[in-house]
Amino acid sequence: MTVIAIDGTFASGKGTLGKRLASHYKMPYLDTGKLYRAVAYKLMETKNSPENLVEAINAAKEIKPEDLKIPELKSGNVAVNASKVAAHAEVRKELLKFQKDFAKKGGILDGRDIGTVICPDAEVKLFIDAKSEIRAHRRHLELNANQESISFETVLKQLTERDTRDMNRKNAPLKIAATAHIIDTTDMTANDVFENAREIIDSIIF
Image 1: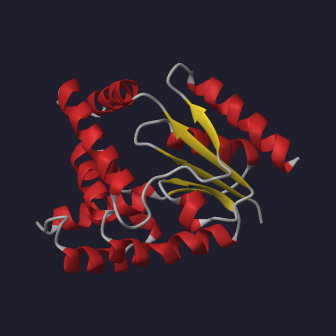
Image 2: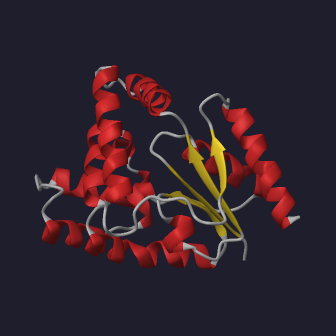
């Protein structure tokens, strides 16, 4: 079964791309970041800190597919705590099986370590990135659209801190897979990104 792995930095556009590619190729899609957001959300709902390893592991063990549909997973606070939760090696281990089971049937997965850890043998590997200021601007617009009042400066600070955590954590850090095709979305529209990715995928698979 064909697997398309999409890795990249926060708010670079990989989720938008993943969903559009899934629709185009009629393939199942998994936003793996939602797994960590769901864990973070469960911790927040029970007033537990994302640094509480025991509770984080327990929350990860309870994740079900329906948990990924919770609207609150889009919130800024959940996203910040999800990055902290994702730094726990034990939590990543608990969620590993969920992701690998999904990939066994073929599909498109996006995240931070899809091409390097989850699906190292994926037929297509993409790495999506953009300048931090551009990503912060996109995220700021998204949060404002969801009625969250937050300054651009705060969003940029949180994004920079998240990049640092993602790239420097000991377990499954964010890095570019050796065979990944890099797409810099800084000066690209969503259509540009889709067409670029589609051309890459078609050249490999078809």
